[in-house]
Length: 401
Image (cartoon, rainbow, N blue to C red):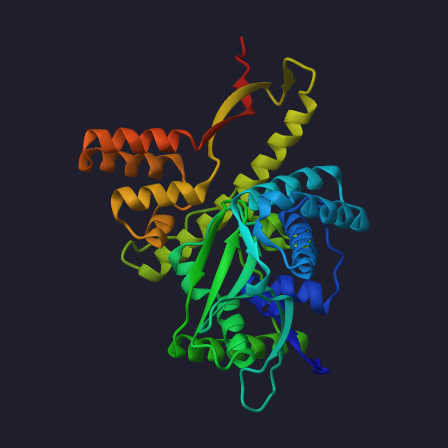
């Protein structure tokens, strides 16, 4: 495939919608980033590359069967990726666990695989003024009439139904695939959420794709303005705590300061209510992420010690129990059979299987199901639970005499 001289990557389109100032730092000013070698982005890159190499090899072997029998191939390529990229050891352990869980719960048929890391160039406007370059992690033919596009994600949170519906990535990939596979009657996008063992599926109507094209042209116009020296406003969003340019961002620094007066004056002003709500929500995410970073540093200082004294507080390590489901997909299937709620609806409802939402659903099922059926469901779910004990930072104020 011939790559045009001028093109825009999907990552650039996505970045400018997250924060125009971040786009300007990366692509216009070439600002020096502060990168964290153990960041979620680094983990995702390692896992993606490992899966690409593993599936190419499995395809060449014409392998058909459960992936748990071929864990060796994932481990082999993971070691190579880690060594080549000079990544820290902790990332190897994280990626190893993600890939192990993936292999334990999935299968592979070489005849269904069409492509791995398929490059595409898509032009959303008829004049060819905008060319988008992208790569699809994996393409499978599910049936003679259906093509499935798969993108691997290492996100800690599942997508909400609204996020799936609005995903620009899904729209672009589907539009590009329609050109690659003009005979396919159905093209679907699946995000394989590797940390959760589930695939989130989304489709697009022709109207959806038309709206996406118009949006892409608007975003591209914004990019041209930024690259021509136009304004690139920084605004708070959920990605701020992990931004590699946050040390250069006055808006981020301001969000970390203590003095934030309440701005709402008219309780009937919907616009003002929404603006302050979004501002506080973004700052809350930033402060929570910063709190976790500082807690991790204090935990390291407490290794081998019973207690630390600083800032008028005693710090020590307690123990907290985290309940994990070993096979999220199986959990959803059991709940689907018991509740008769569709799989995707259940997935959206309980998202990351948070304990509160899960307990709420189980309480409702206890009232609806015969006692024997409920007890059987409870026992089956119990087999999918494991308990993880994690150190918890405890802080106690020192009482002054």
